[in-house]
Image 1 (spheres, rainbow, N blue to C red):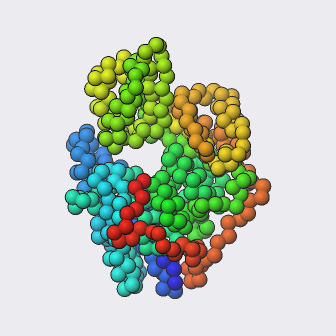
Image 2: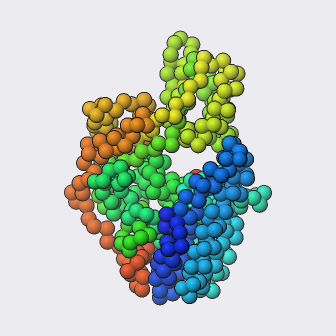
Image 3: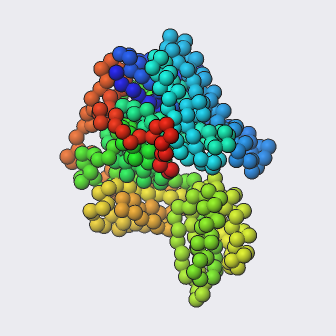
Length: 446
C-alpha cells in the first residue's frame, strides 16, 4: 500500500469530461488499498475570469476580498471532482484549505504556509476515503481565507505530501513533464527524465510555469519525491530530486522566459548611504518581490537605480515610488512594461567557463539587445525587449544544443506500485522519514 498526493491543474479539471477522466485515474490508483489525496486547481480559466470580474467593478480591489473570491474556484473544483468520484463508487470527501489544516501567514494574495495539521485528512484516509483538497489556499490567524499566489496549488500538494509522509507527490498537468524549454515556443524541446531541485527552483523562479518555485522549495527541504507528469496520458514524467545521474555531463539543463516583468528606474538619486535601503524597505513592507537590480553612477553625486518587479505589482509599485521619489529628490521615475526575462539554468555552469560568452554571443548574432544581466552559480538571466523573448529562447536552445540527449544519460527507470503499475510510480521508502511538517510544526517560509 502506498500514499499518493496528486495535484491536478486547471486544464486537467476544465470541464465535466475532464473531471470524469481524473476521477477514473484516481480510482485506478486506489487499487490494492493505495491511498490518494488529490489537490485541485480551479477549473480552466476560472481564476482569470474571477480576477477580470473583480477589476471590472474595482480597478484596485481589496486584497482580503480578492482572496475570498479567488478561493471559491478551487472549492468548486474539489466538490465537483468528489461528486465524480462518488459516481464511480469511490468513497470520497472534499475539503477546503482550512478544513485540511493549512495555516498561513497574514499576507493576502501571496500567503505562505506556516503549519499543517494533517489529522483530519489522516482520519478520512483511515476510513478508506479519497480526500480531495481545494488547493491554493489556507486560513490565517484572523480566520480569514488567504491564497498562496499563482501556481499555489502546487505548493499545497507538496506541503501536504510532506506533512502526510506521502510516498510520492505527482503534479499532473497538460504536459508530459519538464522540458528543456517551453515546447509551445520550441517544438524541438526535449522532455527531461530527471532534474535537480536547485535547477527546477531556478527555472520556476525564472518563469517556467510548470511548477511554482515555493513548491520546489518545500520538496527540497522535506525531501519530497516529486514527479511532473501528464494527466491525459499514462506514462512516466519528470522526477525532481536532489541529484541526477548526468549532473556532471550537462552544462545547461533548461531555458525559461518570464514575460510577466516590469522595470522601474529612479533617476538622479542622491548617491549617499541609506537611499537604496529606504527604497527597498518600502517595497518589502508592501510585499513586492524585487528581482534584478542595477545601480549606475550617472554623474558625480547622483546615481540611477533600476530594478524589476512582477507586472501584477506594477500599480502598487508606482503608487509607492511616486511619493518616495519626491521625498528622496529623485531626478525622475520611469516604468517599462515592454520587457521579458530570459534565463539559462544548469548545475554544470559551476565547473564550465565560457557559458556567459556563448549566451551573449548567440543573442548578439541574432540582434537581441540586453538591458540588464543577473547571475548565480547555476543561472544567467538577461532582461530584453518582450518582442524578442520567444526568439531568444529558440536561439539559446539551439546554441546550447539542448535538443540532443547528453552522452552518458540513462533512461529514468523507477519502481512502480504493484496494482497501480499502469498509472503511477511508487517512491522509495526513504520518502517516509521524519522531519516533515506536521501538527504544530513550523514549515519553512518560502
